[in-house]
Length: 495
Image (cartoon, rainbow, N blue to C red; front, side, top):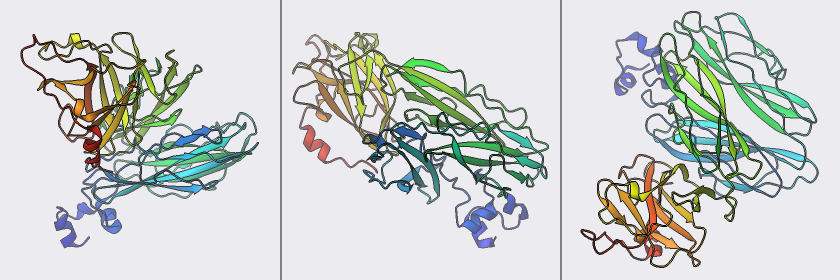
């Protein structure tokens, strides 16, 4: 490596071991960072396209890149591209969650593949792909890439896709691809059990990742991944994704990887990935215990599956899976794509967040439980709802719409409670629909409506509708009444 480049990057030109070092801990040596033209202090992002989906023709499909992550400077750009299948038109290829209409397949089926490229603010890219199977009857296969393996360098390793299955027409083809780690050569990437020779793992070991894609006779596809650790000294970590859960729609769920462990050098990172079910958005897929709000479901419910991958300080990995069964909460009378829940007053309500933002936590709150009664509004007939919204990037914004079971009287306005400033009238940034059974509010990370006031990639909003505080209160609330449309027109959310 040139001395000038090392000096510029804060490395020591006199230290020959710098070449094999990894100052940002991303698994790429400083020398390889130089050869690739990347910043050795900037860890790359991780693209995540969510689970594979199976849909019927003609329905609106939502792709979901909201669980992509970056460990340091954040994601700057999203870019979607279709790589296989009947061509479709994405609503916005640069959106976090673009949509498209599933093409007609008649009595057959089709498999569409979409690739997401995310780029961080330092220019580092990452890609991931997901499959959308469109079918009128044929059920897709289920890929199974086998368990995590830990082997010594130089041994022959056998990957195993034999537990993959298909419920109706059978698996026609297998395809293995290496996605991370020291490059190896597979004996035959199109067989069920290909082999390779384990490479040199160095003094601390190495971890390789392989993706298996299986295709059934009708052309539908499914993918799965597995890890192979190369080590004779370091013991790999043990992932524990926590117990399975059964909940209702509209519930905030916390996944729990806190029981994961490592016997020697400790766990360095956690990464959650949804592997099946209706795509949801995690508060932060790199946390030990990220949260999400369960999606709307019909009477039959749905099963969501998640995989936790943990990595120790020397780069060895393990994974574990957990399922969340989501049942119908019995609430009716709202659009099918609206999250429904019960308020503290036992009323039914709904909530929907605009396409490129997501609600990751939803907690009904009894306003009388808040000790601060100064300027508290009267007649909060639906109580309050404390939500956390994940926008598109730090400083991004969101439109959140509340759905009420009946028209809200005209005397009611939206009020927020913020511990540092008390109760506030938030009417300026709200708009009722003509029927007054829907209320849309505007929120900006670190700006209007964000409880914590910091641009940190998460909007906190505790609010509810009510009438003006009684005249007996000690003081009057700040009233932000005004024209909603003119206010919104001046906002510029970060894309």
